[in-house]
Image (cartoon, rainbow, N blue to C red; front, side, top):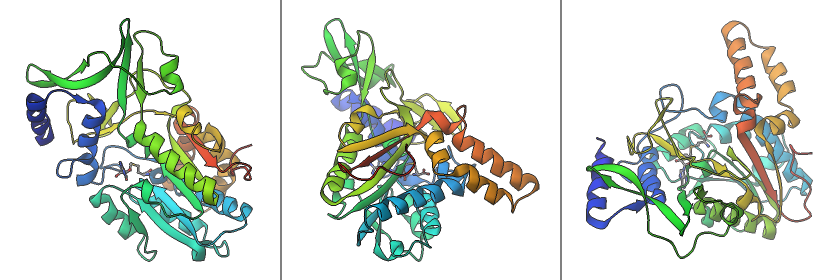
Length: 350
Ligand code: SAH
């Protein structure tokens, strides 16, 4: 049993079952035992790997997309160049390297990282040494100015609640105890549930998820965009209307029971993009493969391949495929770009 499992069992014994959201929040960000608070989980030695860690091309293309969007909007300065949930800082480092040649972009950028984990802030500081980023705890603290934001695999790490509809109405899925071990159960009937389309159209027996922190994060960004202009790219795995239980745990690159190792496995849920897009004045949405292709990944991959041979060339080709191919991350991962009403369309979309 993990130390956090012991604490949670004690807490549930005293005060009763907790929501899936409370469970996820404790597992990921408990100050002492939380998954992100205590470690750098990425890469071969960690539990999972992400697009920016797979290839520099991901951040380069997003960087050029942001710079193009900034030019399309008349190069406002100063502006916030933000990343939510920056992990190791790799994506921001690639964005900054790719945009070095864009006149005025670095001079106008106030590099801002929204990061809850002290351990990862340290790693980001090392990756971005020489750039003096500003860290924020919460997306609500984003300053009032033009915003150019990326977030890769950030929304999927925010705590979700799960609800199930029965013949007698809605219940919330809870984490309680069975035989002194953590176990899922259902709450008593609820007077009300969130009012997103997935809830309105759910049939009996179906489990529906709600990511309130994701809705709040996108709403804050949308509000900055509406007031000051800019663009925000949210990249994550998920779909337009996910239904069913998508809570998943990853530990040492393998799926794990979400209740088995609290604090020692990554917990995520598919992102349901429909209620997020609805919060934006204007948006574009497509698969990661399609967006990266439009941003020019094939040409960039060829260019980089010219300097490589042998195993390094093989692994570069594999990374290109992994980011774009429909059977890999290409169609499971989606990109939601939000902008202000009447703004030029975000680069990467038709
Ligand atoms: N974008 C990175 C890392 C993704 S993992 C990549 O693609 O490699 C999720 C990131 O979000 C981590 O940096 C984690 O510490 C951060 N995070 C998770 N929950 C958060 C929250 N509530 N507020 C701010 N950051 C959070």
